[in-house]
Image (cartoon, rainbow, N blue to C red; front, side, top):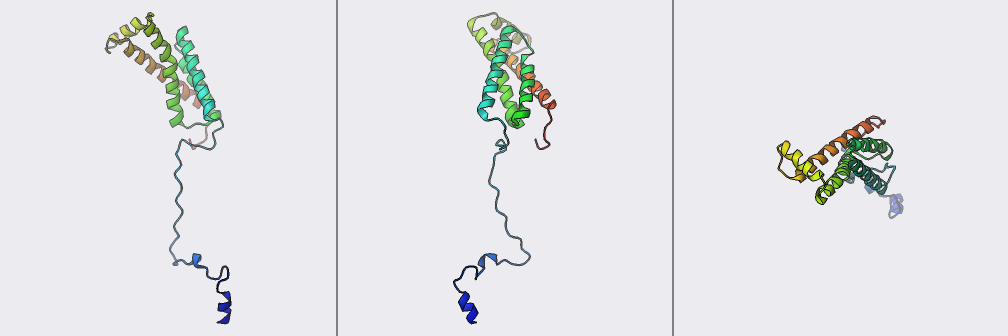
Length: 168
């Protein structure tokens, strides 16, 4: 009995933190919420990707001015190949590539229609031929949709050409 009195107040003598009912597992600590688009293994920071998307938009704008209809597909392939290095998730990269195509192809077409170049009447004729409202904006919106579809198809090809880990 005197030995127990000597242990009173000393470190580790009570062991109250280790008391538990037998056969009942302890509760696990909750895992803190972490958004899926945040990945620590990005090899390129976001500003590099934004500059790449801006460069892709400028390439597409140049292709639109030159009349090269295949440029959104080529820019999408390049974005898919670049994503092998950058490792962005699909739910982030797909909207970014689609926005790149819409801005890159739609800005020159909208500017030409606004300035009165012949692209406006052609877009209006295209929209009325397809049964859309008789506005140049409808034809330009359809053109931007086609450019986005081309860029996404190109992005898919670019990702298919590069090896990916199984978790993506």
